[in-house]
Length: 258
Image (spheres, rainbow, N blue to C red):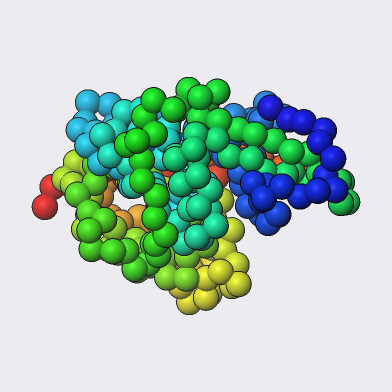
């Protein structure tokens, strides 16, 4: 639902932070150029991977505004959404508690359009009480975040300051036979991750060392790779005339028995 309300009087309900509104639209808004909603697509992929397995607890790590968390709650008994950004978490909590969020999207220059999105219209209201959100650091997770049948880490690893620490310890939080789903465009940048912490995207012994190589190296001791990696597209709307189109590579890992 969009309205052409006068933008001269800001409404306290509307977010002013540009990235926050882009992600609110990315999670709960329209799809663009025929590309499916990415957080929903990631949850669907994860749920497909869980066929025939227990679906007690799921952890949506780097959950941002929480769409994947709500989608996972269709099947899981408990879903914990964790993100480093308090602002993203606040938006997820607002959606969970009030069933709707409102935000102002950039159109051009100072012009914006106002939008309201609801869990009802997305068919997600019925299971919202199974979802809880909290701020957290994927490289230093709280002890109680454990015992998961699924961990989803979508577009996370290349934004962590210590991705190696995350990958080397995440098995401790997943039940035997549980699944780890990782998606990333592998956009390694020193502003997010010190170069010595990159797990791929560099030469090693004069050979290309890809992020997939790094994932196998760090996860191989406790997981087996299920199937071939797949590339899932996503589109982020910046203004009515500017969009980011990206491919995220998805790998699915099964926790080996202890």
